[in-house]
Image (tube, rainbow, N blue to C red):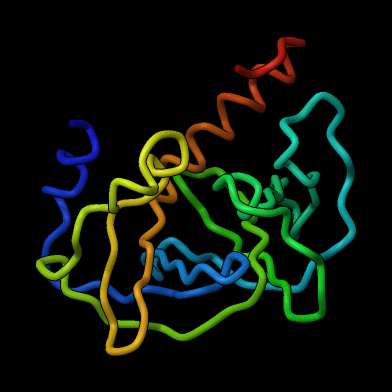
Length: 165
């Protein structure tokens, strides 16, 4: 039900920055993207969830880097030359999403976005706002706020010495 309420707020046109997580084409509102960069040296975070690759200092901002493939219940992202970190700023917090490769910017109309299919329900489905059909592909629209919120809770628990659920 919460997902329906968040979808109801979305209207009009949106530019989606698209990228691949493995072979899955995903996208997010381009206004959420702070920058895109190559993988940099990171510091490991003890007791962090397995999808947290580490943290890095990006011009004075601490950025948590997560393996988006692992976070979404897909395979671990194999680090190659085409991998990129999509740095997103969500409510003042920076999170880096490791993706397999960057694709194009796609203009979508929220009226044409369909709910996520039942087969991505459960844990992984909560990270998607919906699916947009292009001429050739389907784009799973990532809900960055939900990805970030869960990471913030996990980080707070690690700092407090508790294991996240």
